[in-house]
Length: 404
Ligand SMILES: Cc1cc2nc3c(=O)[nH]c(=O)nc-3n(C[C@H](O)[C@H](O)[C@H](O)COP(=O)(O)OP(=O)(O)OC[C@H]3O[C@@H](n4cnc5c(N)ncnc54)[C@H](O)[C@@H]3O)c2cc1C
Image (cartoon, rainbow, N blue to C red; front, side):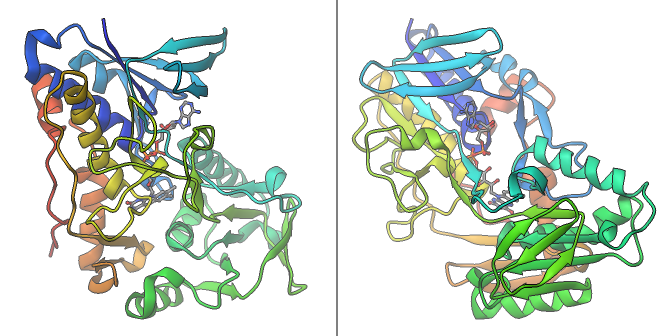
């Protein structure tokens, strides 16, 4: 029996597994014995993009309900090593290490928050990179809500004024209120760049600035963090800000597993794939999502995003089975790019194109963001096999609609 091994069950991995199951089904009897096996350190599919939100009640979806109905096996294990020459993967579970062999591999282990060796960050910092980390932050805020109000209690420093940091800072007033801290709170966005949202360019930045001002979010720009303490953060300007909560949002880097592969890596540690999601220079290996990159429209490299991870996953899943059975592979080309940035109670910012022209902002953009976060990126959840397989078809969605 041939085995397709999918490492990671995030946006790329879940959709690769479902896409592979769909193609296996389509091929029929000839492929029916092919095993599709998913390995993830968690037993759930994380809707990672929602980790900054107030309500985390619906962001960890048990894999059982998504993969069992389509006959995909899954195991909870830490992937420790990949040997593409032997077509073997080393995994670790609570009961020890083991080796899994494969005929085809789909690498979808995503990305991780970059955590520089800032003194005190590991001990005192929080983040929203994973569901576990987001829950830890919420538990911390809830505990603060029960304390008497010293100065540091109600101040949150968010480090990194990029996409994630802005979303965290904009949502923080609502998160603090939810934790029982309201009124005198301070939220401070810190970044070494001279502006907030440096990558948003001249079009989107004024919208972000307006929203943050309306939400009362302060900023400290052109500064780096020198130390993080239990109830303060020190900047290289010499300023010490009393803050019991420091949320680190300092950028993402490809899963460390990518670095173990004997191929070239880009500045973010990603490996190159072609338009069929085949890893360049690695026989029998496909890759998708944040761990991989290609020129998505022939010109622009993919951005680490669920926007690209999901279609990359669907196409990787389709193509890995097609490859195994000598059928034609389908190329992935996406000719649109958007960003929809949550700006908390103020609304959101929806930009289109690689120059990030403002499409809509405020309440209208917020409706689009809510549609994306609560519907568009979710798999069918009623265990309906046909619906799960249909959703994994190797097609390109249109850009998110504007809701009014
Ligand atoms: C707070 C936040 C907000 C974001 N907002 C947006 C947004 O608005 N729009 C957007 O497009 N993108 C957004 N992103 C980025 C988006 O979440 C990622 O680009 C996306 O998750 C990438 O999908 P992926 O499948 O490649 O990786 P992931 O979703 O990270 O999935 C990787 C999977 O691999 C597993 N894994 C990793 N390493 C191992 C290992 N060694 N062993 C076992 N399992 C492993 C993980 O448990 C995980 O399930 C946001 C990210 C964050 C953190």
